[in-house]
Image 1 (cartoon, rainbow, N blue to C red):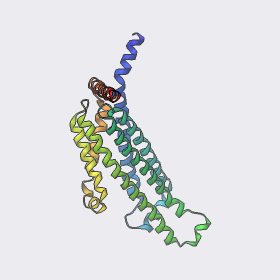
Image 2 (cartoon, rainbow, N blue to C red; image 1 turned 135 degrees about the horizontal axis):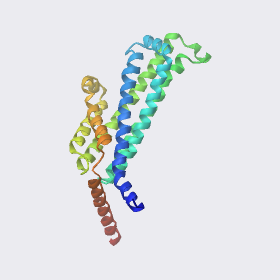
Image 3 (cartoon, rainbow, N blue to C red; image 1 turned 90 degrees about the horizontal axis):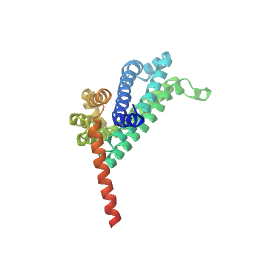
Image 4 (cartoon, rainbow, N blue to C red; image 1 turned 120 degrees about the horizontal axis):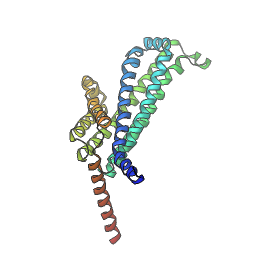
Length: 254
């Protein structure tokens, strides 16, 4: 095969390759999150019980540190997803793709911040001599407060992700290279996470919150297994480039 032939094949495969990498990182994000929630947090943290939670954290310190590692891995995976989606959906609408990326990166930053609160309980419960001025019960309360702040910051990150999903859902719906049903499912996921704008509403609908993962899971699997329709992606990219060039010419004429 000639060098030109290989170059053309790489160019044709690149949008699909980007999509499959995005699907891989997205699926890893979901799986790591499920593992951290159900096999670490649920085993160590007892809602409303600072004393029992403190005992469990100290008894299973290594497992708790693994929870921090899963937080960092999740942030890294979603940073990759955000950047890859920005490239993939640029042909649909460059400005909206950029706006979506901004919301995604803001959510990742808040998620990274929440992971720092995740480590704070160990620093409090196993702190140095300067913490001896506090009683054991006070240290346990402070450790639990850190966990509560971790959850609140993470829930705030979900609000930004909610806006991100709605924008991504719209971009998918307007695209010609992905099924529109994926856009609808992502928009529904976004609306689910936006319930965290009102914590009482989110608590009331907590039993239905897993619905928010369905759209994400469907998109991740589709991207990983099917990718995008390369021909339609290129056609939409060419059309967008033509519109931008025409707009530039009009501005020059003015």
